Image (cartoon, rainbow, N blue to C red; front, side):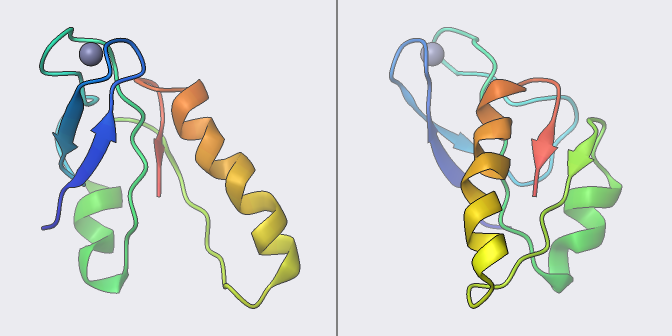
Length: 89
Ligand SMILES: [Zn+2]
């Protein structure tokens, strides 16, 4: 399962964040909660979504869809705004 590198908004440390874990990801250096934005496909859907202990906002989108491209950045920003309380997939 590939991990994402997320930069901590508090201290700037790069953290490796797994797509699935219990609770919410935290910075290894300062313990600040990190945004959780996961790119998920069919093979990992059950693990990433079904095993989450946080509410999950799922954005099903296509790159050829203009409304999807407008909404996408707002959905991604919600991962930062609600860090520790929401997982965005
Ligand atoms: Zn930090």
